[in-house]
Image (cartoon, rainbow, N blue to C red):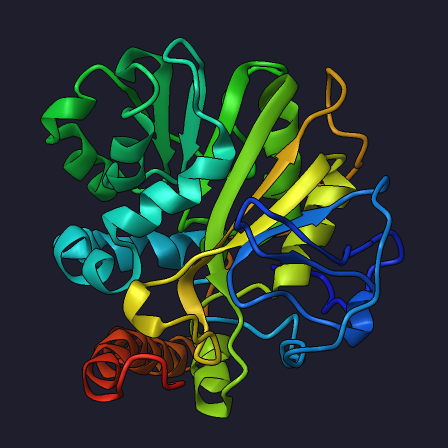
Length: 340
């Protein structure tokens, strides 16, 4: 879980220029400006910035330490024990389509079939199917803490040559400087300590390797904010950037993604809303030093508190299943070119 809500990181520079490649805008002066509706946003130290007129407001503030129903590995385990049954058929069509997956993986630069790739939080292997379009399956490792999700991955014929292992995203069972690419899609929202997980991404990559983290974005609409806060972690876009920067990554970029029928609308948040990449500049471990992990999955839980969080979590998950249906209906009713 994020330790703080960002109100402008000291070292963050958000640049402003228009790229002719069609990736969108890159802005500067973060506290006064915002990301473009979609496209690729670069973060670095060697750009020359131009000022630009704000087009939207920054995402709303949120409690950074609020307990969420599945912001805990044991609860996430049981959540996916049942969700794995319908994950590919119910969740993906509304939040994580094949087109979105391929769009989100593009910044990962999977250009060599001999690359060594780790898919962290790979679950049922849906994202892995996109990876092996570009990389030989025998060079890909799928890691997840849920044996039920991995059982679904093992049933997929194209993934038969992949290595499939159980493991923890915050304590990866790979040596330092191991992989050419690190991919994690739809997993960070369940990590109790996202900074620790991204630090691990840095550690396991080879020098020049690239990490690609795909995950939710925090909503601005009040009801969506409420359900996001009681369900799971919906990071703000600037939080992703700070986590990557602190871990030691360079050439950090954020690409906005979303279902096409949303027409770029992001006020309700998105289960899969951005693809963030960064390059490891030096070999070895991350320069970021963290203390021991604080999560205790064996700590007794008050059953009444758990029941309340379970009910709120169930309501929130139902809400976020209905949101894409609502947006799909609006897309069908509202004429093209008119904001929805």
